[in-house]
Each structure stands twice: as structure tokens, then as C-alpha cells.
Length: 174
Image 1 (cartoon, helix red, strand yellow):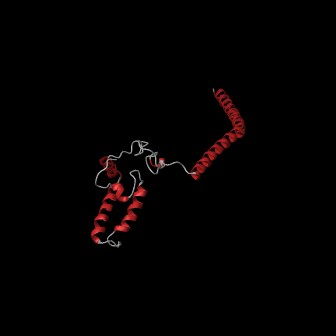
Image 2: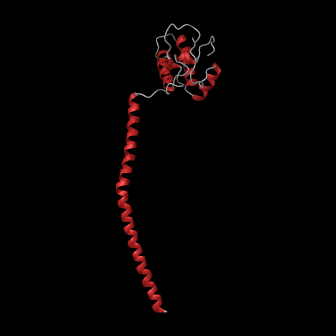
Image 3: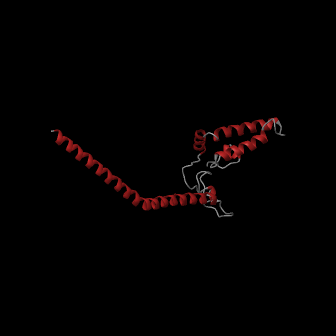
């Protein structure tokens, strides 16, 4: 991101540019409690402009289209999957938090163990139902086909009897 003398909306709210909407709302609520002229111990001359800046930052960042335009204005792009760390060519003095650059959004994260377990149970249930349907089809399928053959042969017998009676009637009548 280009550096300027004016703080970004993200820095006003104490957030990273990849913060989620929930993080933005949470930071805004905390800061608005601190700087609202009616609830703060700070002088009104200090609290009011700071509160107005926080409101402006929240109004921009909470609206997806405005946030996208603002990100373009400050030079931040959400389209790169992995952002290079800012200290790429400097010696490492501390370990880098790769979770900040490996994902596009805070909501795009690895699955928790509970979510993995729930998915496993869903797949297991689906496979079990599929196997049950196949087993029922194999065991009852033969009986269903056999009973269908019996029903169809009885129907054919009835049709033959009816046709023979009809032919006999027509022959006698002529």
C-alpha cells in the first residue's frame, strides 16, 4: 500500500485491509464508545473530530462497493491470492504471520476440526444411504421382478380369454 501522511480508514479503525465485515463492525463499535461525545471523558474538541473520522471510515468500509473503490484509491488489491510480506528483502527479526497473507478474506479460512467431523458424518451418512438403497434393490428387486412377471402373465391370460370370446361371438353372429 502506498504510504501517505493521512491515515487510512483501516488504520483509523485499527484494522488490516483484509479485515472482514464483522471485524470492521466490531472495531467501529469499540471506537465509537470511546470517542462518542456523549460517552467519552475526552474534551469535545478532541472527541468530535475523531468520532466523525471513525464514522466516515465505517460508512466507507462497511459498504462493499465503497470499500472496493476505497481499496483501489489507496492501492490495495484483493485479487492477489498471496500478498508478499512487506519485509521480503530484509533480514527476518521475527517470525512472519502467514495467516495474514495466505487468504483473501478473514472468512476464507481452513475448516475447524468440528466442521471436518460434520462433513465426515454427512459423507458417511450419504454413503450409508446409498449402500442401503443398493442392498434393498438387490434383495427386493428379484421379488419385484418375479411378482411383476406373474402379474403380467395373468394379464396376458385374461386378454387371450377375452379375445377368444370376442372372436367366438363375432363368428357366431356372422
